[in-house]
Amino acid sequence: MTRRGKFVVNKMGNATIHFNRSTAQSLPTPQQHCQNISSPHQPTVCRRVASPPTLTLTQKLEFVLTLINRLLIGFITIYLCWMSLRLDRKDIPWHAVLCTLGFLCLMSEGLMAYYRGNVWTQVCQRQEKARLHWVLQLCGSIIGLIGIVIKMCLEEVHFHTRHGILGLATMIILLISLLSGLGSLYATELKSRLQPRVNKALHNIIGLMTFTLAMLSMYYSFETKLFNDYSLDAAAYMDFRHLLEITTVIIFVLSTYGPLWCLFHSRL
Ligand code: HEM
Image 1 (cartoon, helix red, strand yellow):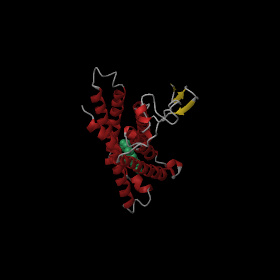
Image 2 (tube, rainbow, N blue to C red):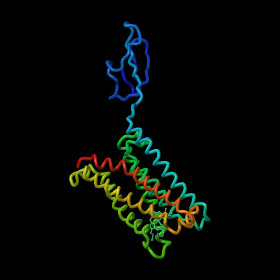
Image 3 (cartoon, helix red, strand yellow):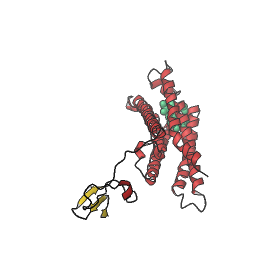
Image 4 (cartoon, rainbow, N blue to C red):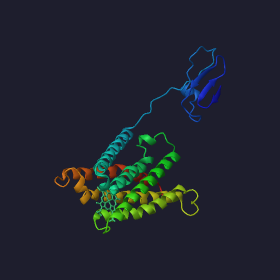
């Protein structure tokens, strides 16, 4: 019997080909998964008995929480984009659109790339998760930074509100975070100068700080004049504003759970 790719070819007797979903390392041992499905004189045919993956209660809960997180991110992103893009072209607040897309949508998705509760990255290897993480973070950062720069060009007085100051802090630490990300990507090459574990833990901490500041700035964006002017009845009723604020807090908690778990379980 020879193995070609993922197919097990039986050359003895009548040639039969069985599709085997396992890789070379995980080929079942005869004792485990072999069944003699013919008479004793005929060749033994190995067939892998496909067992459904068993998920623990915690894993199921993590999948559900990630799904809820994505729904909440979608809710805020779609609402703020709709609120902004329905205006006349010259009035569109691109700052709100780009910062929401970059910091809320792409950055939180990038944070969840390594998370074991993330259904989309379940099939990915560690390297693929790393690539997805940095691509999402880089795109989110660029889009968010363009949004901030647009606002800075439009405003006459700068960084005079809670939202603006937190946004400025986000921008500064984001640049440090991108550098630390580059260091983390080349952790092996830099191991003579900095232990890879320390390097990655540092990147984790700086990345979490960036996301925390971005979400705080997002939280306070719902008290800006722009939001009050263009959002549904925001000036008259506080309910919807509170709903968006609470949603932002939940998104923050659900997105940072994975990286925090990694941080506390990595032995420095
Ligand atoms: C995480 C996302 C966000 C970040 C990091 C951010 C960042 C900033 C920064 C740095 C400024 C100061 C610009 C300056 O003074 O020159 C600013 C101003 C402003 N942003 Fe945002 N922003 C975000 C999301 C939003 C959203 C979603 C809205 C609208 C709903 C918004 C509305 C405003 C307004 C109206 C100003 C000018 C008044 C003020 O400084 O409060 N921002 N933002």
